[in-house]
Image (cartoon, rainbow, N blue to C red):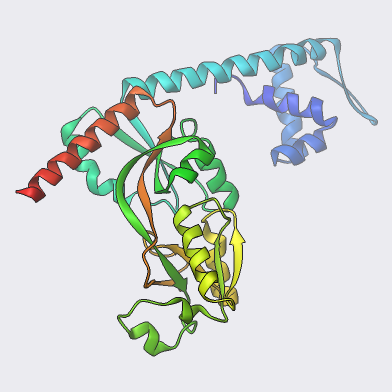
Length: 309
């Protein structure tokens, strides 16, 4: 940061009305807040608060500092962001968002070839949580917190988050289950699961409109078997996998994820429902993203050329 943390603490105290209230918001002790304010006053050589039993009030100097501090923080944050953008642009750094549900292994398989094609490109992993809120924020802020995320998508998903995608391969919907959900002989059989196998069970799946392949599967499944229950979730994340284990529910998922839970296994369906898997990026792509897309496309063309020969 280009400014002192003490200034940010000062603003929090003013807006909270007390040292204790600021401490709760920041997550430190009231004594630590008091120490930061004391250090700020030492640096400024003025008192910013009048302290009394009834609480703290701003001094005239403190009011002046508070008025200017919002501009100071905004300017410093903007300066830091512009510097980071310039740094990543000059150094050709691609920030790859990764999580349990979005592992980097598929990008890692092609990155060596991408690097040979464009040695200037470098990657940096930016982790995010595999909770519903964490996933939602990650996809909503591609281009800000990270540059790309490798994941499952279709037209509806891209439209929802205003994203573009570079297709890598297709991916099929499968049924996730925990041991005991099906007779062992059915699991051991090489034959895929049918909708009849799901009768009497509860299947978790994302809300309608998230993925067309899942919506198509849902319609076929419920059209053929009336005694299958469904439970919707907002986003593929860890919670539905935990529910598989705790409630013996099934989950309609994709075979790209090894498992959202150590005990969840997957088995193919007898019908194929396909979505795309690829590199997701923001509508307004940067020069670095353009370079990455170009390198990946060139690598794909080279690989397909080798296959043809």
